[in-house]
Length: 427
Image (cartoon, rainbow, N blue to C red):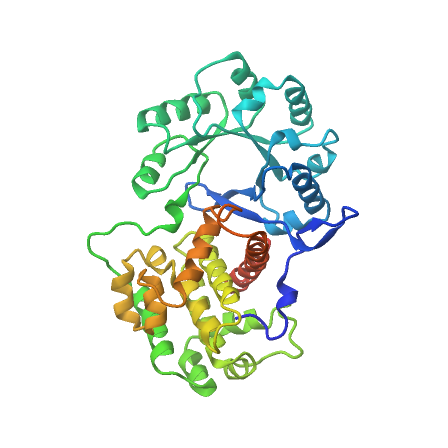
């Protein structure tokens, strides 16, 4: 799916400082985690920084440089975002944050016991900096220190896993009455999600977004069945450039989106491609099949945009992780990543969907957890999403490689999703 010989063009400029404190090509390992509102639209991103014990100053320099050069703003597409970093690392001169009104900071309850830090936070709050208090694993029972902190923050994130439904409802109501916006965090199943919709919450965050909703009997709409039929034809018929053009010829919208995407400034092609057949010759048939699958999935406008972006990010990461594998494997790896969320997107079990697709065993085995050459790649991506790829489980070189791939994947996914929807990548 990447432009031939142009992978470097897709690398964001988020880098760690070199000897002189200037960004280098080494990426800052970060993860952007969405919070969605009741309409399942983006409310804000949380930016989680990977860090190891003892590297606090390095982390601070990295964060400040990415804010200064605008790389962090590009990562979140100009949307509201909260930096999850130790408040103790906030610089005495906080102007770098104050000049970015869309960026806030996640605070932990223990900062209430640090008098000097609280004075600094109060000064930042007076100058317009936004704070979200994360009370994961903590109790909201009243105390003088906590009360001072609640007067400082604009948002509080409650732990939907740690709190009972009754306590979650009670705390959400109390905070809402005080005029504090409430976010439910660690919402990791759809039952909890449905309960959260009944509470006075501004946003919901958790793994629920990426897991399929249980259904007694899967029912696919006509549009979904049509999409699966298209995907099946692409997988089974082994079409050439002419056949690919014929397959999508009667779908004017799909053809338009395909050509708009491949001709976008992101790929900087030497000349404009005027047909699907030309694009298939330029990019290769397997890549164009992946493009068609991608554009088809991006047309699912009844699904949360961040879920679609997550599928695109996985697809790009899988393809890059498969670099060096036999010819054709990177393209198949892309399909594995893209289809890894197909059950969540379609609201149907994966095994049921695979009966409609007839994928090659290497792909279907990875999607159903039976193994195969692509299963380890998907496992790495899931570990990265969960923040589990730390020095306890991986060498620094592997973490840096995943950081590079992830950042490139987010930029690519944002551009492709915007092209598919006819919107700016910053939307």
